[in-house]
Image (cartoon, rainbow, N blue to C red; front, side, top):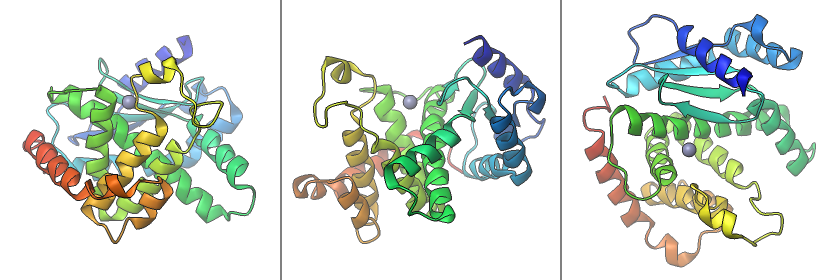
Length: 256
Ligand SMILES: [Zn+2]
């Protein structure tokens, strides 16, 4: 935890001084202890993937306060939004964690490009989910129901507005939610029911339904992947129309 707090502190102060609404920041290389993660940080920095994401988001939004997206070593595989520092922290540990999960679940039959696509898609979904939290916080949006559901719905909506990201982001989100939350398949205990997040299969269904509601012919595969029932499928267009109206209304001063 000390490591994590140090990271947040450093990231919050190490950002570039640009006028962008969203900017990228990196934990300095010498502070990263794991050699594997240090190399990952060097690769990400040189590829400017985070900067690309920040520039894209800055073109999409005008936020009331500057937001940072930081990459660094956390001591755990996670991503989170820190309201006090207005930063989305993406933990380097997430990347090898996603890759090993893909290899474990899909075996070695996937080529490098496919693995890369799933990892980037999952990271897109994760960053947008945290962005949902950031927008709710920075713009003081009203939230009814669970905050985690609201972050999911805002992020889903925003991913679907970006033609270059939509398919990959939805696929990445569905992969992320395919992780079993329960040791016994289909069995959920009181801890699952009390969680601030929906169950993974429910989050997958909501994501697929929004995508299908917006563009049915493009996202039939997502409905199949999330195993959405026909009964729910018949409601998706109406649900998406409501989401569209709601998010556009709430973010009328934010979306460019
Ligand atoms: Zn969340």
